[in-house]
Image 1 (spheres, rainbow, N blue to C red):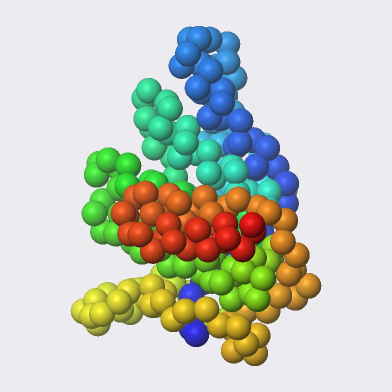
Image 2 (image 1 turned 120 degrees about the vertical axis):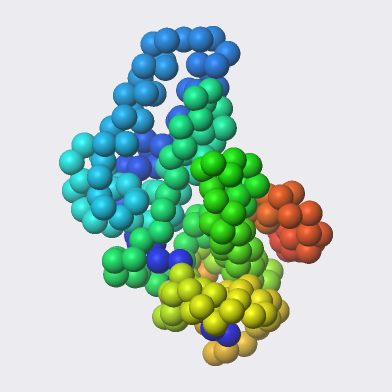
Length: 251
């Protein structure tokens, strides 16, 4: 199996804390028209907007960035997740989203927490207006959502227990954006890179990842959430069935 990397790095612990409360505060603000809360949230968002790292991602600690470590896994997942949710509940709808990066050294660890991303990409591609997300980018987001969702599903389906590990070490492959650019330049023939579904592999030696001691299962919801949202946005029954497989394995 050929692996494709989405190129995001590991963080530490502040972005999640800053990002996660936004939806609740904005929702409360919409109900109560509480200007004080609105001002607090707006000041937080202004600080985010003012953080210019040059790569489209946010540092894990705000004010003055203390490191150059980035991720959608532990410590960063909720921060990015709630940016889209805040967009949905904010009347002015000024779009803020995470762009791709090309100049970071990749750490090839995939955490279960990062498996919220397929749902986020699928939801954004399904709901964001054309003015903010051109057709070509929308299609790419859908492809990325489907490819990554399938990876997260396989981390469950590959295991004898049917339950996914907390963390795996991916065997290095090519960057997905580079592979995609080559495919598009050649005429976009056949299935886009990263979307070929080869089925589960039970033999660890044939897998394109290693458990590296991260085989513990913590009943995390991210993969099932992602599969559900991809099903709801695409209407493809296979994603629903894959979520049910995980339910059966837990039960």
